[in-house]
Length: 110
Image (tube, rainbow, N blue to C red; front, side, top):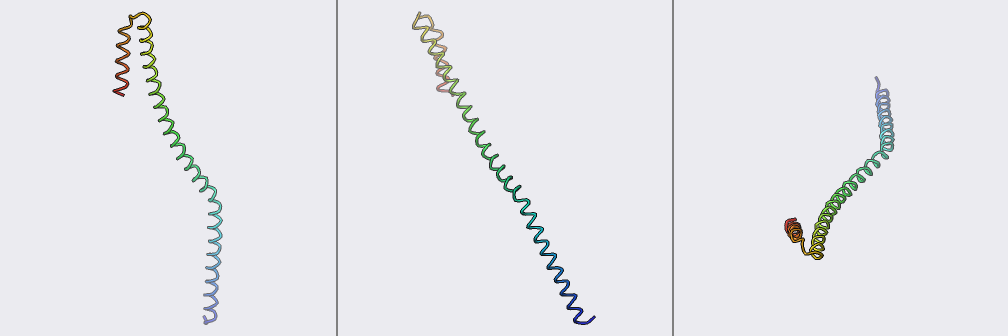
């Protein structure tokens, strides 16, 4: 093997390596371009799930507050009913005491 043949083989190998690395770069670039929409979609889905979790937490808080308001209104209406009955005929003393107890418990123990 002569020096010229050695350099020819070496340059041929280097050229082959360059061609393979160029082809690999094109393949990797193509794969990245193909996967880009999937990554974007995945990020959007994650953002939507995060927003949905926040909305669910807020909805639970609103439902809890709504339930507390409904309970308060019911107790207030029971007390008003007892007061009206007492004002009409003066006999609803026991109902007034029950309403007073419910109001007291709701206001000071809730």
